[in-house]
Image (cartoon, rainbow, N blue to C red; front, side):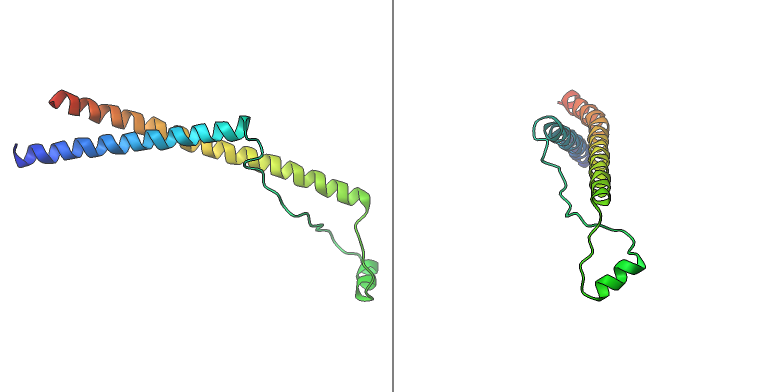
Length: 125
């Protein structure tokens, strides 16, 4: 075997391996996302400690300065909880969409890369 043939063989095997790795990683990520979405639904649930960010009125600030604890009204608390739940749902959906697009991109790039180079390896044998 000449030096040129050895380099070509190494190149073909290397890029076949890279393509195969991309396909495997993309497939694993897609299966992982499917499992999280349909079977283990709490796997990517984000739990955030609820805080009540709201402006403090002058009267409340004065009462806080005097050591009196001021709490948000029931209506404000419910509104905040609803907003927080909506945000969590939107964030989870956005994260899933990013994951699946990454996985599909890996498969779309890796599959032709692998099959093309592997076909060349098989033809040379």
